[in-house]
Image (tube, rainbow, N blue to C red):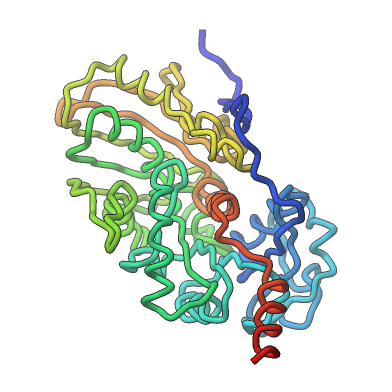
Length: 388
């Protein structure tokens, strides 16, 4: 019998996992806070157990106004009360926070993120500008947490002190790689062919014109296919202590915009290095579970990949919010006559593919000691200067 219920994911905690929460909250700023992804970050930071939103920044036309006055709010949930009265700042590097999330437009993000990192702020970026930089981690914690080992070299190369840049992948890459990871570990990967059906919210606001998307499919998203073909190589590759070594996959992507609000659906064919039955593939996906460190992070889900048996799932309307939007939902696992196995996967492009991904990255950075109290650090620096 097929279920009409949405897919669910396990609770965030693994029994007995250590909780590495802070004694006091780290202060977070959001750059690009008035945009679609910025709004998601503001919403996700409300009542966060580890982080407190203390600064919002955006373009000069919003600067000086309260957040409630400046933002054109698009989420169903109301603006969090703690954010409403915050005064929107420009992109000056004197914000009263310990680290910043960047949801800036790519036209300004590159230099702005570097400025903040140079000024001592850890930058947790959702933008594309630095994803493929040779010393910047492109991070999915469940996939390549070890890539954070690149941060000290980045700081040395760029002359950063306490600042650095960490990025999360493109929204369509995020769900794909989350599903590929357990298959790579179990069987090895050779070739991937993926066709995406991507939601309109991925284009931001106002996004795709209604006359272009209503009753229509647009078989082109600028730069998307190139990102999907490049980013998995870095994500599934290795950090060897001095550089990132690509995974060496054969990968081809075709990306389409479809009239769905939230949720990217992807149809994927996969060539494996090791022969595996369909049952073994399903088992590898179902058994993919985070370790104790990741399980202690507030935004993590125990099983980030959910496998459904119904022949007509996953569906954006039913399954996009699985695991609070942080899980990838897989269905239609079957043999592929060209490669080895094919499947459909769904992920929430604004949560797992954007704001939620950045939040999880920040939580891992906090758990590993990369986030510091900037007030304390600045006070220590002032005291050191006074002693000279």
